[in-house]
Length: 159
Image 1 (cartoon, rainbow, N blue to C red):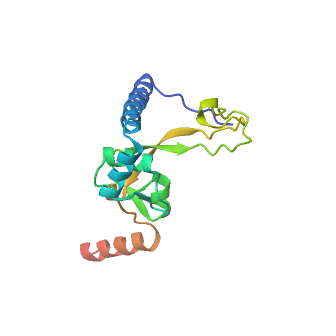
Image 2 (cartoon, rainbow, N blue to C red; image 1 turned 60 degrees about the vertical axis):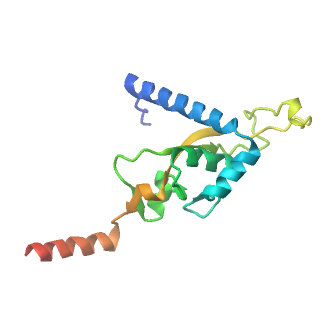
Image 3 (tube, one colour; image 1 turned 90 degrees about the horizontal axis):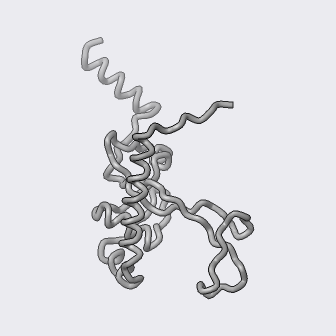
């Protein structure tokens, strides 16, 4: 079994700073009323994933406050699966990602009594995730396209 490499002090500090920035951003969006969030999304347009799923209003607001021109987002591996790659040096947009816990999960946090649910249901967890807008990506050169361009370059250079 391979051991996981431990982050350096600088990496831990950078991660802590990212978490703090995201907490502040999430608090700012949470302070906006639901009607104002919906109006913002309606005015600037709904955000969809590269797989065609609509983001929640809250996540759409998080994305729009970080990059107002966003339209379609996806994770690093989602873009790769769609034949695109994230351009070097691009900074991702932070959103809430569900952890996939279901109601039977033992470690899910119980819903508080004041949430209107007194039956002891468990709520799903969320973590901070990173997505990239389509404008932060470019077509990936894989397979036949890569070989075609390499052949064209060889012909053009006379090799």
